[in-house]
Length: 172
Image 1 (cartoon, rainbow, N blue to C red):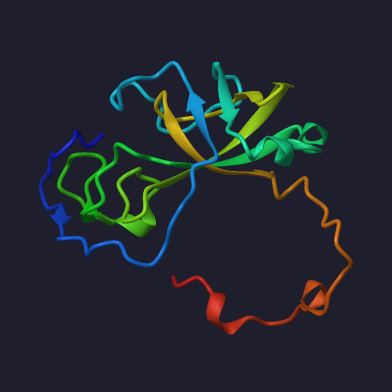
Image 2 (image 1 turned 90 degrees about the horizontal axis):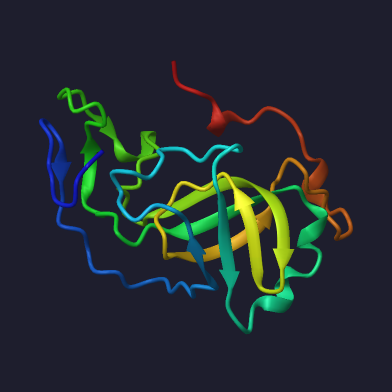
């Protein structure tokens, strides 16, 4: 794991441009047992510890209906991650990978995502398993796991479009 300002063999850092085109409102805070990036799991586990997601006002009413889903997708801001590496060497062996080919927390926009198991809800607090972030991590959003969600809105034209998609083929 990359320590705060470490650059490993063959990694490449850039001078990131100033942010100018987006604003994120944190809707809550995540409580986990981890206070150090060196102790935080690389991927959340469904049998991991119970963690708490606190939703701030005025967003608490947005939790209505969340209890119907056993799994949620949690999006959060990896607030202690560096943002300047374009090539990374996760195995510290000199072999580099582009940032966009990794699930590393080191990204231009350090947005983390986990699929969590919802254990219970008490008021504005959700108790979940499956997180992989630091204690105090800012919450960006919550959504039902897309594999469980069925759209509530009426169908629209694009919902049924199928066919060959030329721009999305995997390169061998």
